[in-house]
Amino acid sequence: MTEATIEVTGLRKRFGDTVALDAMTFTVNPGRVTAFIGPNGAGKSTTMRVTLGLDRADEGSALIGGRPYRSLRHPMHDVGALLDAAAVHPARSGRNHLLWQAHSQGLPARRVDEVLAQTGMAGPARRKAGGYSLGMRQRLGIAGALLGDPPVLMLDEPFNGLDPEGIVWMRSFLRALAAEGRAVLVSSHLMSELQDTAAHLVIVGRGRVIADTSVADLIAAASGDRVTVRTTARWDAMTALKNAGGTAAATSADTITVGGLPAERVVAVLGADRVAFSEVSAHRATLEEAYLELTRDVVEFRAATAREAAQ
Image 1 (cartoon, rainbow, N blue to C red):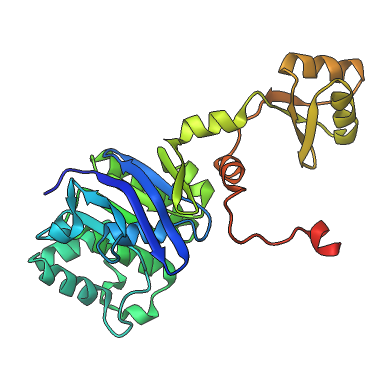
Image 2 (image 1 turned 180 degrees about the vertical axis):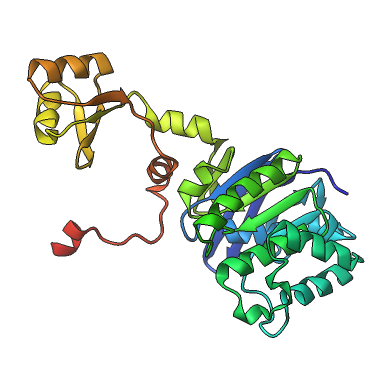
């Protein structure tokens, strides 16, 4: 069995005139969930396909436990992957789908039953996969990734199609897998789920890494010195704070975010102008806010705002 790492170094890949990967470089370490995020066309899927030997890079390397995927003798023992939950024959039962995968790697049938139970799929396992919901196919795909009990996991959009109970399960399940010492790389567009799941982030855009940091550090940097004010007199509060030299932006019907003024000054300004408020606190950015700020200049496809569309 390989050690639990993924090392991507200087990957370059072109498809005709399109640059898919432009010196992509990062490392996924064991013992934590690493989120792999970026806009559509950023290079996430291509990087995962190159790492798994499905595409060849023009330059650079992608190693699993220090070795390229193509050199792994029994790859399911070294890395488990879920790239497409729909990649299952609809006329085959979930259990039989896993049995042929297990047979290809010399794994016993009891291992199939173990991963089915682990992912909550023991009940529907003998039904035809064509009748599965997307959430059930996601669970079956996770079960397949776990067959060889690998130290490295690569999962593309594992939250897609899951109901609320399934999302809660997936969060805790991924964290538990990382706690066992595995390297877990998760690509997803659901920032709220990653904020509660991942410890580390690799954010990419236009084929290269634009941030490689912990979730906590990114959110702290995005939060800055801003202050959140909760008030029923939103416009009066914004006017008073702007007149005092701050910036103010409405974030909901009763909440504004203030920059350029410390919390103590905000309280003093609102008090002096007799503006009622119920809360003044240090602003904590969401992962989605931080992500959008970092990637706003590398988004390939952006819809017009309502104001732009009306012009």
